[in-house]
Amino acid sequence: MNMDLTKYFISPEEERNQKNLLKNKVIEIKYDYREDSKIIELLHNEAEELGIEIDMKCEELYICDYICGQIGIELKSSLADWLDSLTRDNRLESQYQRMVEADLTCAIVVVDNPFSTINGYTKKHVLNNAQKKGFISWMAKAFVSHINMIYLEEKKQFARFCLKSFYYQNIKPPGWRISKKAPLFSIKCKLTPAQRITIAQLMGIPGIGQTMATDLTLHFNSIKNIMLAEIKDITEVSGIGPKTAQLITSALNGEYNPND
Image (cartoon, rainbow, N blue to C red; front, side):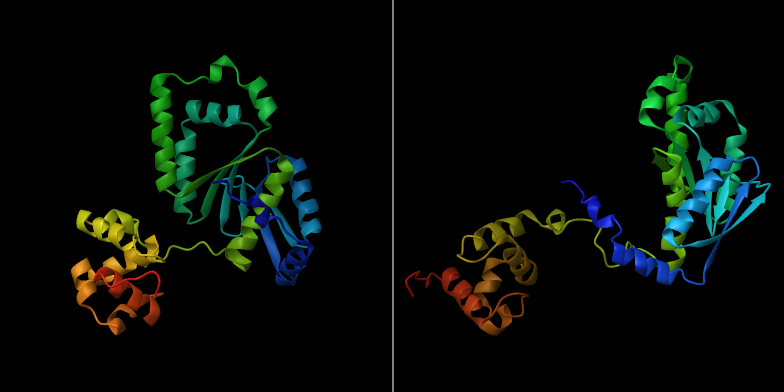
């Protein structure tokens, strides 16, 4: 199933709402003095387009290239550049450790055009087996350390990513939250073989689908218990009214007549 990304496109109305929420708020962005001036210009342009006021501060950053609110970002200009520095520069290990210790939401952003990647990815960047295993281990370590890997095609996207990240973290947190009530496994995984047979039998009754059959089975556990239940007891199951409850009872007791 493909995810509908169009719902994340910002409508003019939503754009106005965001500007209202950001009114009188200043986003402070610290950047390392060695960073590309073109990106700084893009950040200013993007902020103006979004109606956001930003305060850019050039500093000698110790842990990453950009700090936007509570978000620390390490920027790599190409996939080859990042992979090359990862495999040849031991300082990156301690740098990423500092990013985590700084209590920031950390991201490593690789900006690379896919066509330039094909041309620029030479034989020297091909990993041997030991490096591949080390790379996977590093990625796993970064994952559990909450260091996010972001891949973008152009620098303008990076500018928007910085500002939108601040927006969703500080102004309007998105609706993705971990619920303590959310089940780890599908209900189907918890069903016993006997319960699966019961569900199949109940689905043979006209008008009883899989969801209702499953709810009935989980509530009463067996066909026998449903047959012995009163109509009012069966209606306690979500989505079942007196008429459906009577139908279920009649069908299970051999009293069902489709012409009634």
